[in-house]
Length: 161
Length: 161
Image 1 (spheres, chains in turn brown, blue):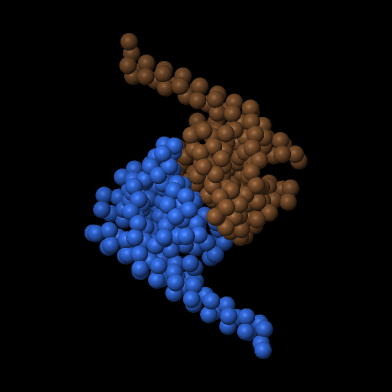
Image 2 (cartoon, one colour; image 1 turned 60 degrees about the vertical axis):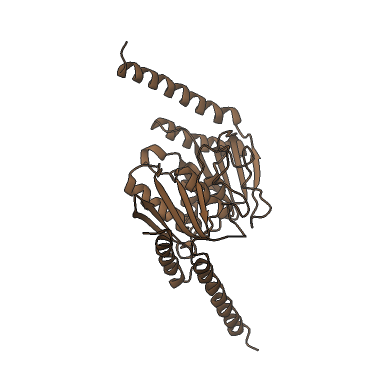
């Protein structure tokens, strides 16, 4: 499978988030050409700050590998990781991160800070950005457009003219 | 209870890690003068990269509060957080972090980077360092001294002179 094929799998995960009205972000983990972890954002549904796509994918992968070190793994995620998820990628010693769209508000793989390639940490991660960037960005734009529509119709309901 | 009293509770958690031969780091979360989350490092035992003291404490606290926002909470931890845990503290919108010893290898509350007070993120955390610094540092030093002893006697076993 190509990098684009794997990112399509991460996009399928993002769609699962979209379908339950969560910000659509999805991730997968690949080990020796096999997908061993999947996750999508469920922060509001689970009411839990750790319910990010990347952490769920890392959780699954660690159970499959049976070790805290995921050294031969690549993580694909549709949106540039936040500091928590970027830090988890370093903690898990993941070899390579591939992401789709940039995250100007919390991106920690270069946009705001770069946790993945801090020379003072004991592990650095190879980073490839922009895989299926448009598709990864479009699903987010569509979600936020729909959300604004819903919230404006709700505010009309609550504040009928 | 004073800040020192709460840090003693975090040290009790660190001792639990010590007792199962894990790097002794402990954390608690306080909400309106009540401890609602506890955790200690179990990375090797669980063979899991997310099994850090702070994440377990945040997990418990989120279940108690029933929300991903832990806005009125303080997190006490014996060692300055790594980037993953510092990022989780930001994600959970925790108000205040209090830590004991500095972490020169991975500290992300000022030692290497400061994730807690990055003005471009949408949440900043008040940070107080040095609470029971000596006790928090001593338990780590004792652990690593013991580990070196064990590993040198093991290498003698494996490589008898």
